[in-house]
Image (cartoon, rainbow, N blue to C red):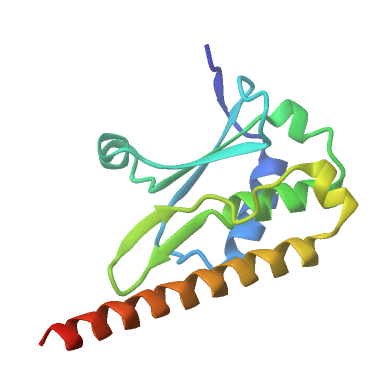
Length: 149
């Protein structure tokens, strides 16, 4: 069973500094909690359920395994915080909060063999090829409709 606790003041200061420097609008309230039940991930970001938001006024809940987090170096802590905050997206036009999944999903062994630029280039190439395929299919459909008429 997960054990939730308030984070230490030092941890909260680090998070607050990075939150202020982030793209997250200031009107969104973020609660940072320690959860020593987190095993496989450095942290977890979630939108507060409506009832929780009503009771606490928090929009976003960030959980970290603080005993593990405390043992990391400053650069590692900074990386983890920025990685967690990057998941938060607020669409000002739609006034909608969402939590995004990471845009990189691969195996570390393959990434070590190549590099992140190669990975991102491949992803961009695939996206371009899929877009081109969709355009060609749309043109073919439109051409077929024109021939029927």
